[in-house]
Amino acid sequence: MTDLFRLDGKVAVVTGGGRGIGVMMARGLLQAGAAKVYLAARKQAELDASVAELSALGEVEGISADLGTAAGIQALADAVAAKEDAVHALFNNAGANWGEPFETFPESGFDRVFDVNVKGVFLLTRALVPLLTAAATDDDPARVINTGSVDGFHVPERGRNNFSYAASKAAVHTLTQHLAGELAPKILVNAIAPGLFPSRMTKVLLSAGEEAVGAALPLGRVGQPDDMAGIAVFLASRASSYVTGTVIPVDGGVSTIR
Image (cartoon, rainbow, N blue to C red; front, side, top):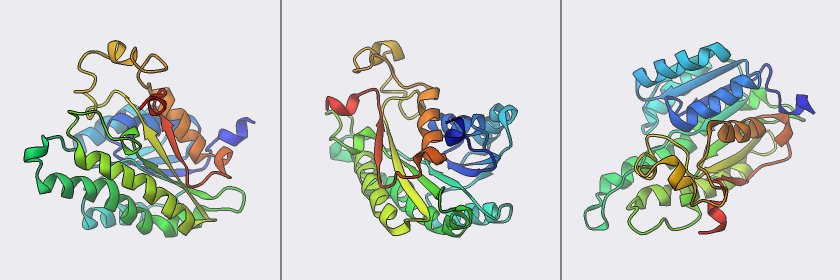
């Protein structure tokens, strides 16, 4: 049974790997035995900090790239291809958000968010398909795991003002299913829909304190690093080799009450 969840010898790429959920995912992959994890993010300082934090667990390397541009996506794909002949798992976790009242919400608030959250997922997946295909076997296909959101299931509460973010995450969920059909059987494509996890993006939502906010959720707490590590390892491991096209809420039950 343990072998089902091991990642020994596998190479993974985690975007949005400079902080938050990306670091939680990468930590889980390394703890499960991944041979190497590449972290991608725009900010070099955040990447350096994450690499320093995780390097005690295994081999990890940071690559600075702006995944909201086609040039940045190609640069990341080229950098990985220069070092690896195969990639077993791609975590499309990079994300952008924009909050502003309806009356003043700018066009740029849609452009930037959709460029990173939706178009970036598609373009990076396509760019890495050759490396993913090279890693695939009949009993253990390669993996693409996209980060959606519980906001992609339901209209966010009034006052959230994240119009482009919620719409982009609903698009990620549908794109996940579309890509799953396109890339089967060599590559499995699934999505994780996180709820409230401590991160810079959720800082405002958790301003009343993690315990106070978490107490209102069905499971009585906000998400913790092991919660994200567990689902990441499952979706990257042989344990999920018959799972594709799914969007899995990891939200403490929020999606059951909204």
